[in-house]
Structures are given as structure tokens and as C-alpha cells.
Length: 165
Image 1 (cartoon, rainbow, N blue to C red):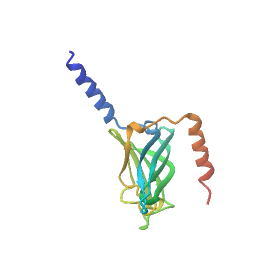
Image 2 (cartoon, rainbow, N blue to C red):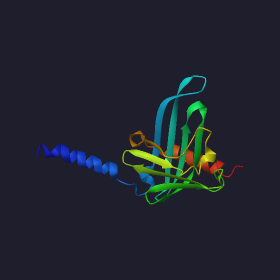
Image 3 (cartoon, helix red, strand yellow):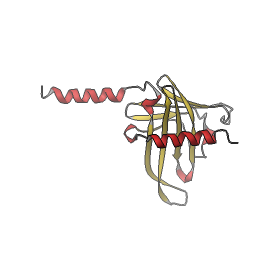
Image 4 (tube, rainbow, N blue to C red):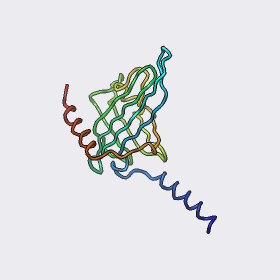
């Protein structure tokens, strides 16, 4: 039995990592990743990417991605997303890419990672020249709960600014 116990622990951990999200709440939280960044002048600095997911119900969440890239380029996108087949899907028809394809950003859990993609650049309008929302990821272990008061503030700010020109 002593030899079987570590195997059972590893199997349970693997099963937990493999679980798919069943609602928007399963993806809720703040994810961050800090890294060394730079620019063409040779300057070096630390940048922090963040993904925020605030569930507003089992089938919907507010999502916000703020990503940093070389030379100060960024991607910044936020809005409501619907929960579809284990993924949160944000759509923005008002900001199509240069080919006229409407923005469609998907976020999902894949084992020990939170992953996202906009397919083949459908949300390119939300990024600087060196930025991309295609095939991104962060460690699931970076996820932290967002206190209820902060969730309310995030949602209130979204409601206040969503209809501005």
C-alpha cells in the first residue's frame, strides 16, 4: 500500500489538471506573468502580462487581457464573453481585422495552462505592431482569486465605459 499511495496521488493530480471548465466561474481569476522585456535602444525592463476573468453567471464572464511585447508594443482587449463548449468566447464585430474578419477571442484551460487565441489574427486591431492574441498562454498556477469588491469595481468600470465613443 505504501508504494501505491504516491501513484494514487499522481493520478489524482493528473486528473485535476485535465479537468475541463464547466462554467465561466471555473476560469475566473487574475492570471499574471512577469518577464524581462526590452526595446531597440537596448533598454531592459520588467513587464507583466495580465488576464482577468470575472464570472457574471455560469454562461458569461467579463474578460480582459493586457499583454506586453518588445519595444513597448501591447495588446489590450476586454469585454463580455459567453461560455461555449468549455471556452469563454469574446466577440467584437465593431473592431474587425484588416481583412474585415470580426474579432473572436477564445480562452480555455488546457491542463496546467490558461490558453487563448484569436484564430488567425481576427483581433489584430487591439494590438500594436509586435503584439498578438494568437496562441497565447499563462500558467494556471498564476491564477489568483479576485476579491468581490474588486470584481464589482471592474464590472462597474466596464459598464461605465462600454458605450463611450
